[in-house]
Amino acid sequence: MREYLGTLAAIAAAAVVIIASYAATWATVTVPVFTGQDAAPTRDVTLTGGQLVPLGAALGWLALAGAAGLLATRTWGRRVVGTVMVLAGGGAGASALAFGLTGPALIDTALAAQGLPAPDSVSRSAWWIAAMMAGLVVLVGGALSVLRGPSWPGLSRRYERRSTATAGPVGGVAAWDALDRGEDPTDPPPPTG
Image (cartoon, rainbow, N blue to C red; front, top):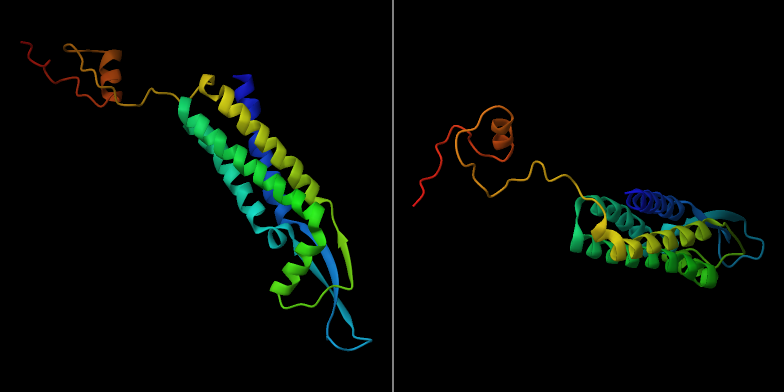
């Protein structure tokens, strides 16, 4: 139980960090206001992680949904959700790492998409490192869910409808249990034979 709750909390917290870090400013660039002039005035433009690597931001939301999926599934369903979280965490972390390795190219592409010229100067923040580390946590949590998830406890089955019928008239607590199963405790038992 402790492993289950710890993994669930770690995945949820890491997913929130991914979402927050992709919404934060990853780069601030200085671009000229007018192109073609030698002494043109400049302005600062901020670029978020979501603008630079849109896929990574979406994968943070997928990881958060996966944490909820772990609560709602059992056995093989947890393996499926865990596999999705491995892919989401790996993708979010790899997207952040791609920015760390090829930041200038991604910045130029994002500026060109906005119709802005190449920057005069670029300053990068460390939010991409937070996204990369949080993606790694989701990846490990997803792998743990695939390997150990089926043995973790699930939601209560108390209110699920059971297919067995009661054997006869019931009273007291048994009547309430029959109502919980969706049965009418006043119905006569089914005929045998």
